Amino acid sequence: MQLHVKVRATRLNPDRLFSQVAHRLAVAIITGASPAGALLPNEDDLKGEISVSRTAYREAVKFLSGKGLVEARPKSGTRVAPRETWNLLDPDVLAWHFKADPNEKFIRDLFELRLFVEPSAARLAAQRRSDADLRRIEAAFRGMAENPPYAEPTVNADLAFHEAIFAATRNPPLQCLAPAVCATIQWSLFLKAPDDQFFFTASLIDHERVLDAIVQRDGDLAAARMSGLVIDSLNSTLRLLAGRAGADAGKTA
Amino acid sequence: MQLHVKVRATRLNPDRLFSQVAHRLAVAIITGASPAGALLPNEDDLKGEISVSRTAYREAVKFLSGKGLVEARPKSGTRVAPRETWNLLDPDVLAWHFKADPNEKFIRDLFELRLFVEPSAARLAAQRRSDADLRRIEAAFRGMAENPPYAEPTVNADLAFHEAIFAATRNPPLQCLAPAVCATIQWSLFLKAPDDQFFFTASLIDHERVLDAIVQRDGDLAAARMSGLVIDSLNSTLRLLAGRAGADAGKTA
DNA sequence: CCTGTTTCTATCGTATGACTTTATCCGGGA
DNA sequence: TCCCGGATAAAGTCATACGATAGAAACAGG
Image: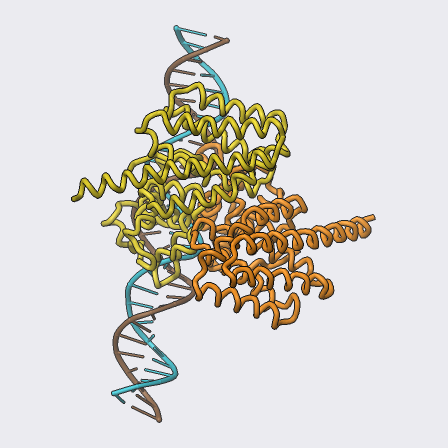
Protein backbone atom coordinates (compact mmCIF):
# COMPACT_ATOMS: atom_id res chain seq x y z
CA MET A 1 0.00 0.00 0.00
CA GLN A 2 2.51 2.60 -1.06
CA LEU A 3 -0.01 5.26 -1.92
CA HIS A 4 1.70 8.57 -2.11
CA VAL A 5 -0.76 10.96 -0.62
CA LYS A 6 0.13 14.29 -2.10
CA VAL A 7 -2.56 16.25 -0.38
CA ARG A 8 -0.61 19.25 0.62
CA ALA A 9 1.32 17.71 3.43
CA THR A 10 3.88 20.20 4.63
CA ARG A 11 5.83 21.41 1.68
CA LEU A 12 8.82 20.24 3.62
CA ASN A 13 11.55 19.28 1.22
CA PRO A 14 11.27 15.50 1.43
CA ASP A 15 14.90 14.92 0.65
CA ARG A 16 16.02 16.77 3.72
CA LEU A 17 17.64 14.38 6.07
CA PHE A 18 15.71 15.22 9.21
CA SER A 19 12.56 14.95 7.15
CA GLN A 20 13.36 11.37 6.21
CA VAL A 21 14.12 10.53 9.79
CA ALA A 22 10.84 12.08 10.91
CA HIS A 23 9.04 10.08 8.29
CA ARG A 24 10.62 6.81 9.34
CA LEU A 25 9.89 7.38 12.99
CA ALA A 26 6.35 8.52 12.27
CA VAL A 27 5.49 5.48 10.20
CA ALA A 28 6.93 3.19 12.85
CA ILE A 29 4.83 4.93 15.46
CA ILE A 30 1.63 4.97 13.49
CA THR A 31 1.81 1.36 12.36
CA GLY A 32 2.30 0.42 15.97
CA ALA A 33 5.75 -0.99 15.42
CA SER A 34 6.77 1.41 18.17
CA PRO A 35 3.89 1.13 20.65
CA ALA A 36 2.85 3.94 22.95
CA GLY A 37 5.32 4.42 25.75
CA ALA A 38 8.14 2.80 23.81
CA LEU A 39 11.47 4.53 23.93
CA LEU A 40 12.84 5.90 20.74
CA PRO A 41 16.43 5.01 19.97
CA ASN A 42 18.72 6.82 22.29
CA GLU A 43 20.18 9.98 20.84
CA ASP A 44 23.65 8.54 21.16
CA ASP A 45 23.01 4.97 19.98
CA LEU A 46 21.51 6.07 16.73
CA LYS A 47 24.88 5.98 15.07
CA GLY A 48 24.26 2.28 14.75
CA GLU A 49 20.55 2.26 14.00
CA ILE A 50 20.30 5.09 11.57
CA SER A 51 23.49 6.81 10.65
CA VAL A 52 22.54 10.38 11.23
CA SER A 53 23.80 13.10 13.47
CA ARG A 54 22.18 14.03 16.74
CA THR A 55 21.19 17.40 15.32
CA ALA A 56 19.14 15.97 12.49
CA TYR A 57 17.61 13.38 14.76
CA ARG A 58 16.65 15.93 17.36
CA GLU A 59 15.05 18.19 14.78
CA ALA A 60 13.01 15.27 13.53
CA VAL A 61 11.85 14.59 17.07
CA LYS A 62 10.91 18.24 17.54
CA PHE A 63 8.91 18.08 14.36
CA LEU A 64 7.02 15.03 15.58
CA SER A 65 6.54 16.36 19.08
CA GLY A 66 4.74 19.33 17.58
CA LYS A 67 2.20 16.90 16.20
CA GLY A 68 1.83 15.11 19.52
CA LEU A 69 3.39 11.87 18.33
CA VAL A 70 6.25 11.79 20.80
CA GLU A 71 7.14 13.23 24.16
CA ALA A 72 10.72 13.94 25.12
CA ARG A 73 11.75 14.30 28.73
CA PRO A 74 15.22 14.66 30.11
CA LYS A 75 16.68 11.46 31.45
CA SER A 76 13.66 9.25 30.87
CA GLY A 77 14.15 9.38 27.14
CA THR A 78 11.94 10.17 24.22
CA ARG A 79 8.80 8.12 24.25
CA VAL A 80 5.97 7.46 21.85
CA ALA A 81 2.97 9.43 23.05
CA PRO A 82 -0.42 7.77 23.62
CA ARG A 83 -2.66 7.93 20.59
CA GLU A 84 -5.07 10.36 22.24
CA THR A 85 -2.50 13.10 22.03
CA TRP A 86 -1.78 12.59 18.33
CA ASN A 87 -3.06 15.33 16.12
CA LEU A 88 -4.87 13.03 13.71
CA LEU A 89 -6.11 15.90 11.59
CA ASP A 90 -2.66 17.19 10.86
CA PRO A 91 -1.98 16.74 7.15
CA ASP A 92 1.32 15.00 7.76
CA VAL A 93 -0.04 12.65 10.37
CA LEU A 94 -2.87 11.79 8.04
CA ALA A 95 -0.49 11.16 5.16
CA TRP A 96 1.55 8.85 7.34
CA HIS A 97 -1.60 6.98 8.31
CA PHE A 98 -2.48 6.33 4.73
CA LYS A 99 1.05 5.26 4.02
CA ALA A 100 0.64 2.69 6.77
CA ASP A 101 -2.50 1.15 5.25
CA PRO A 102 -5.19 2.41 7.61
CA ASN A 103 -7.69 -0.03 9.00
CA GLU A 104 -11.36 0.07 8.23
CA LYS A 105 -12.31 1.66 11.52
CA PHE A 106 -10.12 4.63 10.80
CA ILE A 107 -11.66 5.08 7.36
CA ARG A 108 -15.15 4.90 8.82
CA ASP A 109 -14.24 7.48 11.43
CA LEU A 110 -12.94 9.85 8.81
CA PHE A 111 -16.02 9.43 6.68
CA GLU A 112 -18.11 10.10 9.74
CA LEU A 113 -16.24 13.33 10.20
CA ARG A 114 -16.78 14.19 6.55
CA LEU A 115 -20.46 13.56 7.00
CA PHE A 116 -20.60 16.03 9.86
CA VAL A 117 -18.53 18.70 8.28
CA GLU A 118 -18.88 18.69 4.52
CA PRO A 119 -22.63 19.24 4.27
CA SER A 120 -22.33 22.24 6.55
CA ALA A 121 -19.40 23.47 4.54
CA ALA A 122 -21.42 23.11 1.35
CA ARG A 123 -24.24 25.09 2.91
CA LEU A 124 -21.91 27.95 3.79
CA ALA A 125 -20.28 27.79 0.40
CA ALA A 126 -23.66 28.11 -1.29
CA GLN A 127 -24.50 31.10 0.87
CA ARG A 128 -21.21 32.92 0.80
CA ARG A 129 -19.49 32.02 -2.42
CA SER A 130 -18.11 34.78 -4.59
CA ASP A 131 -18.15 34.48 -8.35
CA ALA A 132 -14.47 33.60 -8.23
CA ASP A 133 -15.23 30.79 -5.78
CA LEU A 134 -17.87 29.47 -8.12
CA ARG A 135 -15.55 29.57 -11.09
CA ARG A 136 -13.02 27.58 -9.13
CA ILE A 137 -15.56 24.95 -8.14
CA GLU A 138 -16.90 24.73 -11.68
CA ALA A 139 -13.42 24.39 -13.11
CA ALA A 140 -12.73 21.54 -10.73
CA PHE A 141 -15.93 19.82 -11.76
CA ARG A 142 -15.05 20.14 -15.43
CA GLY A 143 -11.66 18.64 -14.61
CA MET A 144 -13.45 15.62 -13.19
CA ALA A 145 -15.81 15.26 -16.09
CA GLU A 146 -13.36 15.78 -18.90
CA ASN A 147 -10.61 13.44 -17.83
CA PRO A 148 -10.52 9.66 -17.80
CA PRO A 149 -11.93 8.09 -14.63
CA TYR A 150 -9.44 7.69 -11.79
CA ALA A 151 -6.60 9.22 -13.76
CA GLU A 152 -4.37 11.56 -11.86
CA PRO A 153 -5.83 14.81 -13.19
CA THR A 154 -9.28 13.51 -12.38
CA VAL A 155 -8.33 12.71 -8.82
CA ASN A 156 -6.73 16.11 -8.43
CA ALA A 157 -9.83 17.76 -9.79
CA ASP A 158 -11.96 15.85 -7.30
CA LEU A 159 -9.79 17.03 -4.45
CA ALA A 160 -9.83 20.56 -5.83
CA PHE A 161 -13.62 20.46 -5.95
CA HIS A 162 -13.91 19.71 -2.26
CA GLU A 163 -11.13 22.07 -1.31
CA ALA A 164 -12.73 24.88 -3.30
CA ILE A 165 -15.95 24.37 -1.39
CA PHE A 166 -14.10 24.69 1.88
CA ALA A 167 -12.38 27.81 0.60
CA ALA A 168 -15.75 29.33 -0.27
CA THR A 169 -16.92 29.03 3.33
CA ARG A 170 -14.60 31.90 4.31
CA ASN A 171 -14.04 30.14 7.58
CA PRO A 172 -10.31 29.49 8.07
CA PRO A 173 -10.61 27.06 10.98
CA LEU A 174 -13.13 25.08 9.02
CA GLN A 175 -10.82 25.12 6.02
CA CYS A 176 -8.22 23.36 8.13
CA LEU A 177 -10.35 20.26 7.82
CA ALA A 178 -9.98 20.25 4.05
CA PRO A 179 -6.74 18.28 4.09
CA ALA A 180 -8.37 15.58 6.19
CA VAL A 181 -11.30 15.38 3.82
CA CYS A 182 -9.06 15.33 0.79
CA ALA A 183 -6.85 12.61 2.20
CA THR A 184 -9.92 10.48 2.82
CA ILE A 185 -11.16 11.04 -0.70
CA GLN A 186 -7.81 10.26 -2.19
CA TRP A 187 -7.62 7.02 -0.31
CA SER A 188 -11.08 5.93 -1.37
CA LEU A 189 -10.38 6.83 -4.99
CA PHE A 190 -7.23 4.78 -4.80
CA LEU A 191 -9.30 1.82 -3.71
CA LYS A 192 -11.84 2.34 -6.44
CA ALA A 193 -9.34 2.90 -9.20
CA PRO A 194 -9.11 -0.73 -10.28
CA ASP A 195 -12.85 -0.89 -10.66
CA ASP A 196 -15.04 -0.12 -13.59
CA GLN A 197 -16.78 3.13 -14.34
CA PHE A 198 -19.82 2.37 -12.25
CA PHE A 199 -18.79 4.24 -9.13
CA PHE A 200 -17.28 7.01 -11.13
CA THR A 201 -20.35 8.04 -13.08
CA ALA A 202 -22.49 7.85 -9.96
CA SER A 203 -20.02 10.05 -8.12
CA LEU A 204 -19.89 12.51 -11.00
CA ILE A 205 -23.64 12.93 -10.85
CA ASP A 206 -23.46 13.50 -7.10
CA HIS A 207 -20.88 16.20 -7.61
CA GLU A 208 -22.88 17.88 -10.33
CA ARG A 209 -25.91 18.06 -8.09
CA VAL A 210 -23.89 19.71 -5.35
CA LEU A 211 -22.44 22.17 -7.80
CA ASP A 212 -25.89 22.98 -9.09
CA ALA A 213 -27.14 23.76 -5.59
CA ILE A 214 -24.17 26.05 -5.01
CA VAL A 215 -24.84 27.82 -8.29
CA GLN A 216 -28.38 28.44 -7.09
CA ARG A 217 -27.09 29.65 -3.74
CA ASP A 218 -29.42 27.18 -2.08
CA GLY A 219 -27.67 26.28 1.17
CA ASP A 220 -30.06 23.64 2.42
CA LEU A 221 -30.09 21.90 -0.92
CA ALA A 222 -26.32 21.97 -1.14
CA ALA A 223 -26.05 20.47 2.32
CA ALA A 224 -28.52 17.72 1.55
CA ARG A 225 -26.83 16.84 -1.70
CA MET A 226 -23.41 16.86 -0.15
CA SER A 227 -24.71 14.45 2.47
CA GLY A 228 -25.82 12.19 -0.31
CA LEU A 229 -22.47 12.43 -1.99
CA VAL A 230 -20.57 11.51 1.15
CA ILE A 231 -22.89 8.64 1.97
CA ASP A 232 -22.63 7.22 -1.53
CA SER A 233 -18.88 7.50 -1.35
CA LEU A 234 -18.77 5.82 2.04
CA ASN A 235 -20.96 2.95 0.90
CA SER A 236 -18.94 2.20 -2.18
CA THR A 237 -15.71 2.47 -0.22
CA LEU A 238 -16.95 0.08 2.45
CA ARG A 239 -18.06 -2.37 -0.18
CA LEU A 240 -14.62 -2.32 -1.71
CA LEU A 241 -12.96 -2.65 1.67
CA ALA A 242 -15.12 -5.67 2.42
CA GLY A 243 -14.19 -7.15 -0.92
CA ARG A 244 -10.53 -6.56 -0.29
CA ALA A 245 -10.73 -8.11 3.16
CA GLY A 246 -12.41 -11.14 1.64
CA ALA A 247 -9.75 -11.38 -1.05
CA ASP A 248 -7.00 -11.11 1.54
CA ALA A 249 -8.62 -13.78 3.68
CA GLY A 250 -8.90 -15.99 0.62
CA LYS A 251 -5.27 -15.42 -0.20
CA THR A 252 -4.01 -16.29 3.27
CA ALA A 253 -6.30 -19.33 3.59
CA MET B 1 -5.45 39.76 27.19
CA GLN B 2 -3.05 37.42 28.87
CA LEU B 3 -5.43 34.53 29.23
CA HIS B 4 -3.50 31.40 29.92
CA VAL B 5 -5.25 28.77 27.89
CA LYS B 6 -4.41 25.54 29.58
CA VAL B 7 -6.34 23.31 27.25
CA ARG B 8 -3.89 20.57 26.79
CA ALA B 9 -1.48 22.31 24.53
CA THR B 10 1.56 20.14 24.01
CA ARG B 11 2.92 19.17 27.35
CA LEU B 12 6.14 20.65 26.13
CA ASN B 13 8.17 21.75 29.08
CA PRO B 14 7.55 25.48 28.92
CA ASP B 15 10.79 26.41 30.55
CA ARG B 16 12.83 24.76 27.85
CA LEU B 17 14.66 27.38 25.90
CA PHE B 18 13.63 26.35 22.40
CA SER B 19 10.06 26.26 23.64
CA GLN B 20 10.23 29.88 24.73
CA VAL B 21 11.71 30.87 21.41
CA ALA B 22 8.97 29.02 19.55
CA HIS B 23 6.40 30.77 21.66
CA ARG B 24 7.82 34.21 21.01
CA LEU B 25 8.05 33.63 17.29
CA ALA B 26 4.58 32.13 17.14
CA VAL B 27 2.94 35.03 18.92
CA ALA B 28 4.73 37.50 16.68
CA ILE B 29 3.50 35.60 13.65
CA ILE B 30 -0.07 35.21 14.78
CA THR B 31 -0.53 38.77 15.91
CA GLY B 32 0.69 39.82 12.52
CA ALA B 33 3.76 41.59 13.88
CA SER B 34 5.64 39.33 11.46
CA PRO B 35 3.40 39.35 8.37
CA ALA B 36 3.25 36.50 5.90
CA GLY B 37 6.34 36.36 3.79
CA ALA B 38 8.44 38.20 6.32
CA LEU B 39 11.88 36.84 6.96
CA LEU B 40 12.66 35.52 10.37
CA PRO B 41 15.93 36.67 11.85
CA ASN B 42 18.81 35.05 10.11
CA GLU B 43 20.21 32.08 11.94
CA ASP B 44 23.53 33.82 12.28
CA ASP B 45 22.32 37.30 13.24
CA LEU B 46 20.22 36.11 16.09
CA LYS B 47 23.06 36.54 18.50
CA GLY B 48 22.02 40.16 18.60
CA GLU B 49 18.25 39.85 18.45
CA ILE B 50 17.60 37.05 20.83
CA SER B 51 20.61 35.66 22.56
CA VAL B 52 20.15 32.02 21.93
CA SER B 53 22.19 29.41 20.15
CA ARG B 54 21.50 28.32 16.61
CA THR B 55 20.57 24.87 17.88
CA ALA B 56 17.75 26.06 20.08
CA TYR B 57 16.55 28.49 17.47
CA ARG B 58 16.52 25.85 14.75
CA GLU B 59 14.56 23.44 16.91
CA ALA B 60 12.00 26.13 17.57
CA VAL B 61 11.68 26.72 13.84
CA LYS B 62 11.24 23.01 13.20
CA PHE B 63 8.51 22.92 15.79
CA LEU B 64 6.69 25.79 14.11
CA SER B 65 7.21 24.46 10.62
CA GLY B 66 5.41 21.30 11.67
CA LYS B 67 2.38 23.46 12.36
CA GLY B 68 2.65 25.23 9.05
CA LEU B 69 3.54 28.60 10.53
CA VAL B 70 6.88 29.02 8.83
CA GLU B 71 8.70 27.74 5.79
CA ALA B 72 12.47 27.47 5.65
CA ARG B 73 14.41 27.32 2.42
CA PRO B 74 18.14 27.51 1.85
CA LYS B 75 19.38 30.77 0.51
CA SER B 76 16.06 32.56 0.61
CA GLY B 77 15.72 32.31 4.35
CA THR B 78 13.02 31.29 6.79
CA ARG B 79 9.76 33.01 6.08
CA VAL B 80 6.39 33.33 7.73
CA ALA B 81 3.98 31.09 5.84
CA PRO B 82 0.69 32.38 4.47
CA ARG B 83 -2.21 31.93 6.84
CA GLU B 84 -3.87 29.29 4.68
CA THR B 85 -1.15 26.83 5.53
CA TRP B 86 -1.41 27.35 9.29
CA ASN B 87 -2.90 24.47 11.17
CA LEU B 88 -5.45 26.56 13.02
CA LEU B 89 -6.89 23.55 14.81
CA ASP B 90 -3.60 22.60 16.36
CA PRO B 91 -3.88 23.08 20.14
CA ASP B 92 -0.72 25.13 20.32
CA VAL B 93 -1.66 27.38 17.43
CA LEU B 94 -5.03 27.91 18.99
CA ALA B 95 -3.50 28.73 22.35
CA TRP B 96 -1.23 31.28 20.71
CA HIS B 97 -4.23 32.83 18.99
CA PHE B 98 -6.00 33.33 22.25
CA LYS B 99 -2.88 34.75 23.77
CA ALA B 100 -2.88 37.30 20.98
CA ASP B 101 -6.44 38.47 21.66
CA PRO B 102 -8.33 36.98 18.74
CA ASN B 103 -10.65 39.19 16.74
CA GLU B 104 -14.37 38.72 16.59
CA LYS B 105 -14.34 37.09 13.19
CA PHE B 106 -12.09 34.33 14.46
CA ILE B 107 -14.37 33.69 17.42
CA ARG B 108 -17.40 33.55 15.16
CA ASP B 109 -15.63 31.09 12.88
CA LEU B 110 -14.77 28.85 15.77
CA PHE B 111 -18.31 28.93 17.09
CA GLU B 112 -19.51 28.09 13.61
CA LEU B 113 -17.27 25.07 13.66
CA ARG B 114 -18.59 24.11 17.08
CA LEU B 115 -22.08 24.38 15.73
CA PHE B 116 -21.28 21.95 12.95
CA VAL B 117 -19.40 19.47 15.04
CA GLU B 118 -20.65 19.41 18.58
CA PRO B 119 -24.29 18.48 17.92
CA SER B 120 -23.14 15.55 15.83
CA ALA B 121 -20.67 14.58 18.50
CA ALA B 122 -23.43 14.71 21.10
CA ARG B 123 -25.57 12.48 18.91
CA LEU B 124 -22.83 9.87 18.66
CA ALA B 125 -22.10 10.15 22.36
CA ALA B 126 -25.73 9.46 23.17
CA GLN B 127 -25.73 6.44 20.91
CA ARG B 128 -22.37 4.94 21.81
CA ARG B 129 -21.60 5.98 25.36
CA SER B 130 -20.50 3.35 27.81
CA ASP B 131 -21.48 3.59 31.45
CA ALA B 132 -18.00 4.84 32.20
CA ASP B 133 -18.42 7.58 29.62
CA LEU B 134 -21.67 8.60 31.22
CA ARG B 135 -20.14 8.70 34.68
CA ARG B 136 -17.43 10.97 33.35
CA ILE B 137 -19.91 13.34 31.75
CA GLU B 138 -22.06 13.38 34.86
CA ALA B 139 -19.09 14.03 37.08
CA ALA B 140 -18.13 16.99 34.92
CA PHE B 141 -21.64 18.37 35.11
CA ARG B 142 -21.65 18.08 38.87
CA GLY B 143 -18.35 19.92 38.89
CA MET B 144 -20.02 22.77 37.05
CA ALA B 145 -23.05 22.84 39.29
CA GLU B 146 -21.33 22.54 42.62
CA ASN B 147 -18.64 25.16 42.22
CA PRO B 148 -18.94 28.94 42.18
CA PRO B 149 -19.67 30.39 38.74
CA TYR B 150 -16.63 31.08 36.56
CA ALA B 151 -14.22 29.82 39.22
CA GLU B 152 -11.37 27.75 37.94
CA PRO B 153 -12.77 24.34 38.91
CA THR B 154 -16.03 25.30 37.27
CA VAL B 155 -14.34 26.24 34.03
CA ASN B 156 -12.34 23.04 34.07
CA ALA B 157 -15.50 21.05 34.66
CA ASP B 158 -17.15 22.76 31.71
CA LEU B 159 -14.24 21.85 29.49
CA ALA B 160 -14.25 18.33 30.85
CA PHE B 161 -17.94 18.05 30.05
CA HIS B 162 -17.41 18.79 26.39
CA GLU B 163 -14.27 16.74 26.16
CA ALA B 164 -15.99 13.75 27.74
CA ILE B 165 -18.69 13.96 25.11
CA PHE B 166 -16.09 13.87 22.38
CA ALA B 167 -14.43 10.93 24.08
CA ALA B 168 -17.73 9.05 24.13
CA THR B 169 -18.03 9.28 20.35
CA ARG B 170 -15.26 6.68 19.99
CA ASN B 171 -14.09 8.54 16.95
CA PRO B 172 -10.44 9.56 17.39
CA PRO B 173 -10.27 11.98 14.44
CA LEU B 174 -13.38 13.69 15.71
CA GLN B 175 -11.87 13.83 19.18
CA CYS B 176 -9.03 15.86 17.75
CA LEU B 177 -11.47 18.75 17.49
CA ALA B 178 -12.02 18.74 21.23
CA PRO B 179 -9.08 21.03 21.95
CA ALA B 180 -10.41 23.57 19.48
CA VAL B 181 -13.83 23.44 21.07
CA CYS B 182 -12.42 23.68 24.57
CA ALA B 183 -10.21 26.63 23.69
CA THR B 184 -13.24 28.43 22.32
CA ILE B 185 -15.23 27.71 25.44
CA GLN B 186 -12.45 28.80 27.68
CA TRP B 187 -12.13 32.08 25.87
CA SER B 188 -15.83 32.79 26.03
CA LEU B 189 -15.94 31.92 29.73
CA PHE B 190 -13.07 34.27 30.29
CA LEU B 191 -15.10 37.03 28.70
CA LYS B 192 -18.16 36.22 30.73
CA ALA B 193 -16.36 35.86 34.03
CA PRO B 194 -16.77 39.48 35.11
CA ASP B 195 -20.50 39.26 34.58
CA ASP B 196 -23.26 38.25 36.88
CA GLN B 197 -24.82 34.84 37.22
CA PHE B 198 -27.28 35.33 34.43
CA PHE B 199 -25.37 33.60 31.68
CA PHE B 200 -24.09 30.97 34.01
CA THR B 201 -27.41 29.62 35.18
CA ALA B 202 -28.75 29.62 31.64
CA SER B 203 -25.71 27.71 30.47
CA LEU B 204 -26.02 25.26 33.32
CA ILE B 205 -29.55 24.44 32.27
CA ASP B 206 -28.43 23.94 28.68
CA HIS B 207 -25.78 21.51 29.84
CA GLU B 208 -28.20 19.61 32.01
CA ARG B 209 -30.57 19.15 29.11
CA VAL B 210 -27.79 17.74 26.96
CA LEU B 211 -26.73 15.41 29.72
CA ASP B 212 -30.29 14.24 30.14
CA ALA B 213 -30.56 13.36 26.46
CA ILE B 214 -27.33 11.40 26.63
CA VAL B 215 -28.60 9.53 29.68
CA GLN B 216 -31.67 8.58 27.67
CA ARG B 217 -29.49 7.54 24.74
CA ASP B 218 -31.57 9.81 22.53
CA GLY B 219 -29.20 10.91 19.78
CA ASP B 220 -31.46 13.33 17.97
CA LEU B 221 -32.47 14.99 21.19
CA ALA B 222 -28.87 15.30 22.31
CA ALA B 223 -27.92 16.88 19.00
CA ALA B 224 -30.78 19.35 19.12
CA ARG B 225 -30.03 20.35 22.66
CA MET B 226 -26.34 20.70 21.98
CA SER B 227 -27.21 23.01 19.11
CA GLY B 228 -29.20 25.10 21.53
CA LEU B 229 -26.32 25.18 23.96
CA VAL B 230 -23.82 26.33 21.36
CA ILE B 231 -26.15 28.96 19.97
CA ASP B 232 -26.89 30.35 23.41
CA SER B 233 -23.21 30.45 24.16
CA LEU B 234 -22.45 32.17 20.87
CA ASN B 235 -25.12 34.79 21.41
CA SER B 236 -23.99 35.70 24.87
CA THR B 237 -20.37 35.79 23.76
CA LEU B 238 -21.16 38.06 20.84
CA ARG B 239 -23.11 40.36 23.11
CA LEU B 240 -20.14 40.64 25.41
CA LEU B 241 -17.76 41.17 22.53
CA ALA B 242 -19.96 43.97 21.24
CA GLY B 243 -20.00 45.50 24.69
CA ARG B 244 -16.26 45.25 24.98
CA ALA B 245 -15.75 46.79 21.55
CA GLY B 246 -18.02 49.64 22.57
CA ALA B 247 -16.13 50.11 25.81
CA ASP B 248 -12.80 50.07 23.99
CA ALA B 249 -14.07 52.59 21.47
CA GLY B 250 -15.26 54.74 24.32
CA LYS B 251 -11.90 54.49 26.02
CA THR B 252 -9.87 55.42 22.99
CA ALA B 253 -12.25 58.20 22.01
C1' DC C 1 14.12 -5.67 56.81
C1' DC C 2 12.19 -1.50 55.37
C1' DT C 3 12.39 3.50 54.43
C1' DG C 4 14.29 7.83 53.42
C1' DT C 5 18.38 10.28 51.81
C1' DT C 6 22.40 10.90 49.17
C1' DT C 7 25.24 10.20 45.43
C1' DC C 8 25.86 8.69 40.89
C1' DT C 9 25.04 8.44 36.12
C1' DA C 10 22.64 8.20 31.89
C1' DT C 11 20.12 11.16 28.89
C1' DC C 12 18.27 15.18 27.18
C1' DG C 13 19.17 20.31 26.52
C1' DT C 14 22.18 23.91 24.89
C1' DA C 15 26.25 25.98 22.81
C1' DT C 16 29.82 26.38 19.26
C1' DG C 17 32.43 26.02 15.06
C1' DA C 18 33.21 23.87 10.84
C1' DC C 19 31.72 22.05 6.71
C1' DT C 20 28.03 20.77 2.99
C1' DT C 21 24.14 21.54 0.15
C1' DT C 22 20.97 24.24 -2.19
C1' DA C 23 18.70 27.90 -4.38
C1' DT C 24 18.90 32.51 -5.89
C1' DC C 25 21.30 36.23 -8.17
C1' DC C 26 23.99 38.09 -11.60
C1' DG C 27 26.93 38.45 -15.33
C1' DG C 28 28.78 36.64 -19.60
C1' DG C 29 28.20 34.42 -23.83
C1' DA C 30 25.42 32.50 -27.71
C1' DT D 1 16.72 38.03 -25.83
C1' DC D 2 17.65 33.82 -23.78
C1' DC D 3 20.41 30.39 -21.63
C1' DC D 4 24.18 28.89 -18.93
C1' DG D 5 27.34 28.87 -15.13
C1' DG D 6 29.74 30.63 -11.35
C1' DA D 7 29.45 33.45 -6.98
C1' DT D 8 27.08 33.70 -2.78
C1' DA D 9 24.13 33.56 1.16
C1' DA D 10 21.38 31.01 3.86
C1' DA D 11 19.77 26.72 5.68
C1' DG D 12 21.23 21.86 6.48
C1' DT D 13 24.38 18.58 8.63
C1' DC D 14 28.06 17.07 11.52
C1' DA D 15 31.14 16.53 15.62
C1' DT D 16 32.15 17.84 20.12
C1' DA D 17 31.70 19.67 24.57
C1' DC D 18 29.44 20.95 28.66
C1' DG D 19 25.31 21.81 31.68
C1' DA D 20 21.05 20.26 33.92
C1' DT D 21 18.03 16.88 35.58
C1' DA D 22 15.54 12.93 36.77
C1' DG D 23 15.88 8.21 37.65
C1' DA D 24 18.59 4.44 39.85
C1' DA D 25 21.55 2.59 42.88
C1' DA D 26 24.00 2.73 46.97
C1' DC D 27 23.82 3.83 51.60
C1' DA D 28 22.45 5.23 56.30
C1' DG D 29 19.11 5.12 59.90
C1' DG D 30 15.14 3.33 62.13
